[in-house]
Length: 66
Length: 207
Image (cartoon, rainbow over all chains, first blue to last red; front, side):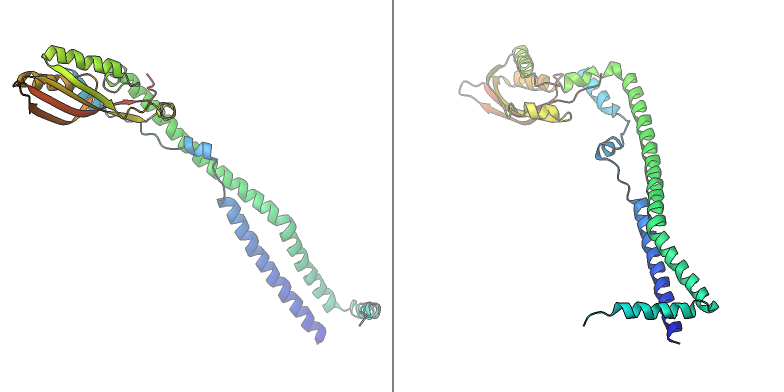
C-alpha cells in the first residue's frame, strides 16, 4: 500500500512538473515571437513621408511677385 | 548521527530484486520513466528548439512588416520626386522668399534701394538676434528656420513713407512687419519706425 502511494505521488509530481514546464515553455515561445526589436537606425528610415507639397504657398508667392 | 547509507542501499536493492518482477511495478516504472524523459526532453531539447523557431518566425514577421513600410516609403519618395520635378521651374521663388543663407547685406541694400526710390531717408537701421554663435550648430539642423528681428526708422512725408512700407512688404524676400509707428518731427516731416522679422533657413533644398 505504501509503494502504491509513493507511485501515485510521484506520478502527480511528475505530471504537475510537466504541465508547469509546458506552460513555461509556451510563455517563453510567445515572448520570443513577440520580442523582436527593430534597430533604431532602421526605425528612423521607417518614419512615414508625406509626398504632398503645398502648392498654394507657391501660388501665393508667385502672386506676390506679380 | 552518521548516515548509514550502506544499509539503506542494501535494503533498497533487496526491495528492487523482489518487486522488479511484478508486472504492475514494471508498468508503473515505464510510465514514471516516460514522464521523466518527457520532462527532460521538454526542458533541454524542445524548449530551445521551439524558442529558436518562434524567434525566427517573429523576425520574419517583423521583417515582412518592415519591407511593407519601406515599400510604402519608396513609393512616397518616388511620388515626391515626380512632384518636385513637375514644380522644378516654380521653385526658385522659394529661394527668393526664404533664402538658405542670412544674406543680410543683400537685404539691407534692397531696403536702401527702395528707400531711395520712395524718397525717404533711413535714419536708423538695426538688426538684432542674429544667431552668429548658433550658425554652426544650426547648420546641422536642416529644417531650422532662423528669424532675425529688424527695426528701422525713416523720415519723409506721408505718401513717401506709405510707398516705402508698401514696397518693403513686396520685396521678394519675405519680411513680416510687426509694428509701424508714425511720429511728427519739429520740421513737419514724419518719422516712421517699423519693426519686423526676416527669416532664412538652413534647409538643403534638393533642387
